Each structure stands twice: as structure tokens, then as C-alpha cells.
Amino acid sequence: MSPDAVLGIIIAYKYWMFVPLALMVGGPMVALLSGLLTSLGYLDILPTYGMLLLCDLIPDTIYYSLGRHTNLKSFLGKFGKRIGINEKSFLKMEGLWKTHTFKAMLFSKWAYGFSMPLLMSAGLSHLPFRRYVVYTLSITMVQYVVLFVIGFYFGSSYKVLVHSIQYMEYIIAGALLLIIVGYIAFSLYIKRTFLREQQNGTLS
Image (cartoon, rainbow, N blue to C red; front, top):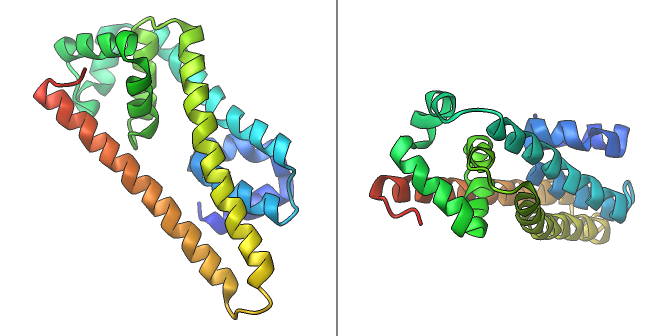
């Protein structure tokens, strides 16, 4: 789904579509576009930010619950090859969740394409749910403030410059696209780092 289509849906349905859109295109894109729309007057700051947090908390809780109610054999059978984890390396991952929760959560939330199984592994590792929520929320709050502010800044720039610079909307759209691409590139870097540490046995 293109950013333009997401923008249209948010304008039409506002906060009610945040969670389904986040599940379809990712919370970070919704955060960027929500910041832009807030600066243009389509959304209010507090309910927008609250819904953005729900966009992450709801799926993260679901993934944790799925992990808590599965077993290691089923988990490895479905995700083991995909994320480079076997029974031996899962013990290291389990230890990482319990002793380096912040690092494990960063890996899980930023590793592009790996978030679901890695967050499931927290539940499978029996990480206390309260601790899980504290860490996922703390990271999400900072992440979405940054992305929201970036979107808001570009929206504000658009309002100021739209009448003086021809094709300003294309400049703003291009800048947002670069930010989204940069976010994905950084996520892929985290993913490669995770795989490398898994293969080298240095994940700790």
C-alpha cells in the first residue's frame, strides 16, 4: 500500500484505522504520516500519539501470547531456519531476554521481517509479561516520538513553503520516502547484525 493511499485512509477514518493500517504497512510509516497530518490540522496530537502506542502494544502483546502458548519444537519448526535459531542457540536467546532485555527488545523491534518470531521468543522464554511491556513501551515511545516529530516537521514545512516553491508536495513526498527507506535500511542492518551474532555465537 502506497503512502498516498495510507494518507487517504487516515484522513477519511482518522484514529479508527491506525491499528489495522499499522498491521498492514507498519507502525513507523503510520507514525510518519500521522505527524504530517497532525501538522496540517487533520489529527490531534494526544489521541494520535496514544493510538500510535496501541499500534505497537496490541500486536506485540499478541506475539508474546503466541510465544507463551507454543512449545520450542513447534517454534523452531516454523521459524528456526528463517531466523537462524536452533535448540542450542535458542538457549542463548532465552538468556539474552532474561539478562539483556533491552538489547533483545531492540533487536526484536528493529530487525526487519524478524519482529514477530523474535517477540514470540520472549513469551517462549517466559520473560515476565510486566517486564516485557515496560521494555517494549519504553522503546516504542521514543521511536514514535522521533518519527512523529519528523512527519510533523515536514508537514509544517509544507504549509510554510507550499505557496512559494513549485512542486513542494513532491519534495515533501520524496523526503518522507527517503526517511522510510532509511528506516528500512537501518532495520535490515539490525537484522544482519542479529544473524551474524547468531552464527558467530556472540549473541549475549
